[in-house]
Image (cartoon, rainbow over all chains, first blue to last red; front, side, top):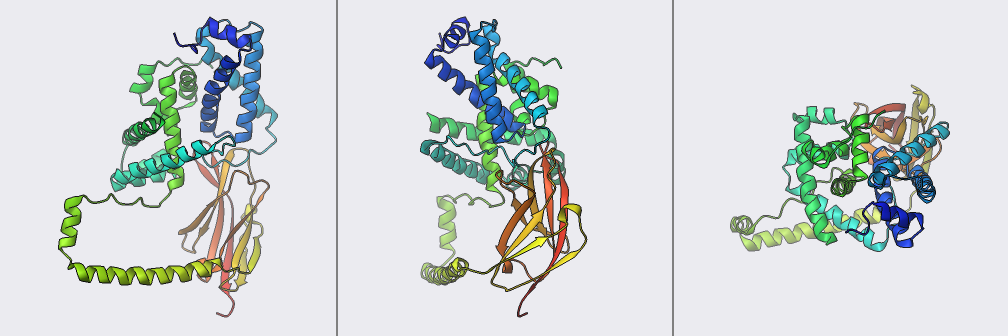
Length: 184
Length: 224
């Protein structure tokens, strides 16, 4: 049995402040929160605030015995995150978010190994682009580097949305293989 | 709103990871998929890898990647067509000449230069005044750009356009940019004398952008 399956035993250990379980909880959901919030265009400072507040509320609820459905624990954390985010937006409606041009938000916690891995990933992406037909390469660059709208890019290159999705799918598949090979 | 439940097979069949990365999911689909990501490791890994890929794509830009190295037969055929000694001598001349040119360029770029600062006033309000800027050719030109931030925008960028509207340069404001004024610096001789526009765009999270200010300047060099 996976020690970190979200079951009643996991919640019991989390509620008892078991260090290993807490560490898993933070690592597991931090990644998910960061990626989904970045995808919504949330700035890094707000992401960090939302993450911490979400964890605080979830841990309080777990320790108080108020989380009963261990199988739906992931969904519970997500719903808490959504509430925290909407509260954060209401509170900060007067303030301007820092500009965030992309999902590439600087992470203060990146160590040397992570930086090297990121460099390596950059090389893989370039290699994948180089292997693509020129039109497909320019299509991806137009969509992501120039940050143009999907319909505009598809119209300019004479392709439909399905073509763009499949192109991304294939590129991701190749990148995923290289990425996993390096991780392993 | 009631969140739809997505299962893994449905997510894979509908290319939801790809659609998520492309920003194609509507609000209901996005919530349902994000909920799924919080409990499906396989789909989350796919999105995590995809996010890494897209992040690098955003920074690679228009640099054309190195063309694939030709195979053995390709190289052999290319060499067979050229007499080897002539080819090698020609290459030597080219490399030598390029090296000298490159060193001269690097020395020029490394030299300190006077920075001339100019503010394009009224840009946030679309002023139609043309700012006349006269600078030494070998100076650095720093343009202060005012813009009006709005809550709906997640990022800003400035573009320099020629008088015909062609985009010459694009500068993305860093996420640490605060306030309502950005300074953009470049070698003055990166542009020829003439009239240019500086346009600031705000970008929304859905990818659409809107002009939030424009200013026009006439560049001249002293001693022309």
